[in-house]
Image (cartoon, rainbow, N blue to C red; front, side):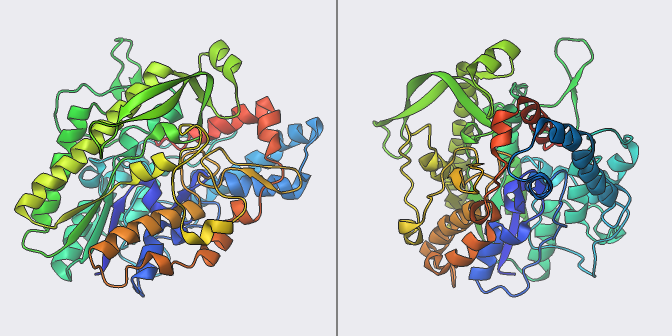
Length: 495
């Protein structure tokens, strides 16, 4: 096997709130470039789950046009949107996509076992047997604006055991790595986990910090803990203390080393992007310039711009202050400090392991790449150098939240999809480009970033090639914006 991928929603090709476009994912592009003819990954109906916001907006645009009157919005919120959500729910709960229906065809496994919502420890803690049990025991009834029940677990089940066979019921992501390594050998493994050890902070706009005792996580990430206030409220951790992250990552690499012992397998480890760059959380209010130590040049400090508050993207400072729905400057810088420490840990552990198994681990610094793309954080002048194909590409994608005018012209965005968190098809192309550059340096056969078909990649990005003309409604209609925020929160597996 030339390529095996372990990751979370990014590596799954999750876009605009749904697991729907793995065929456009960076790992699929890499597999194509490496000449892999049978790289297997799960495919999903266009609706995906839990909610494909792009598909929903396309439906609204088709029915109501680029501007929607107050009366039409009443109709849309009462009938059109619930009808769409009900269609998705029926398919995944009672239709052909239900948890008790095997994946179409005879596919028994995938070469990409990435699952939305997975944090580091889920790579060995979650398997199909667990998913089946939880889905059965935690079903909820239908409701207005309801989305797919247990969508996180349903996604994991389909990826980890597509035929629902007892033979593979207890295989986690790492168990599948062992299966393929033992059966045929694996030449290259991409492991990109860790974003979900912090991502919930910007989706929830609050922080539930782990205890910091340096113990390995012992329960799947969809489980809850009791609130420390003693009121019995159940919450989920959304930010790992660096000591706890380190314990989990050591466990991850220990397990990988054991699986690959004696094997000549290259493992590419992705660093954790600074989740606060994602435009779902919009910086508002006064800005501050913070000196951050440059990782490459220890005596050099970079200027990084932070805002006083971070709230959901359609809203401004008055909303953040009046509602209390925000992360403050101190919270956001704390989140970023934690993630920077995660990445130092990943790099240090890789260096230590390479002293024992030279060349086993290679870092792909996705965090640094995204940091160089960040628009607002870099004062409006991102430093990322796009591939040559983009020299005269207009408009040039940026990390702002997606927006288009009523004539269907893209005004901003292009890197993040409509959930404000996950990459677009073009962004996946950029991730593939950067990954192939590293692979080429390591003499991985056929790894040539310059041969990516950018024309095809850009054409596949419908947000870019066919901008949504009613996007202004999200900025102009507060009620709709609040509804969208509620939908996007459902990306979080425990919602």
